[in-house]
Image 1: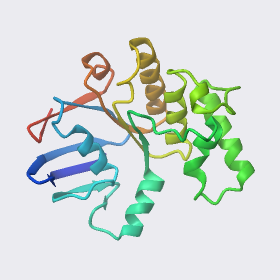
Image 2: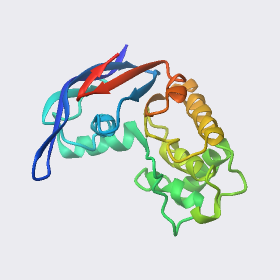
Image 3: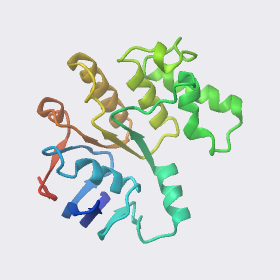
Image 4: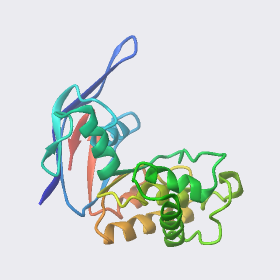
Length: 221
């Protein structure tokens, strides 16, 4: 069953000169797949991930998720899509330095309507699941380089999104920690989460069910 369908996606940036990030990207993802996105630096991998996540406007083409054209809709519906369907893990993690681990994880739940105590309970459960039980009240700078990405994964998945988008989630990590993070992503995938992740590491890419390669703004499989 096709869950994510990208057809002829085109994205152009104008920064004094016109830069075409994506020319004509077409590919599809089935529900529950674990898909790696690979390609040379500057090939448009992160742009593609942002487009699937509803963070970048298309200049051409279409992106359909669960039979919904996410760019042919209202801004409110697009915002709901980002909140209800998608979790993001960024390379720099973007943890709020003045918030504890559990407070960082609670952030996506603030619009959920759950009472505050239930938000904290849910956040603590997810931190336990990623192996951080007992570290919930530490600030980001009090966590190790291997613990911080686990907080980012917990935050991205606390609202149980159907899709997880990870942009170089192991890019700043040593090889051992990177492998541990990939195992966590695989565990999430085994629970049914559809995952798209960007990586430049061939070894980590081999963990995916399949690879979509981006070169010169075009997708190849």
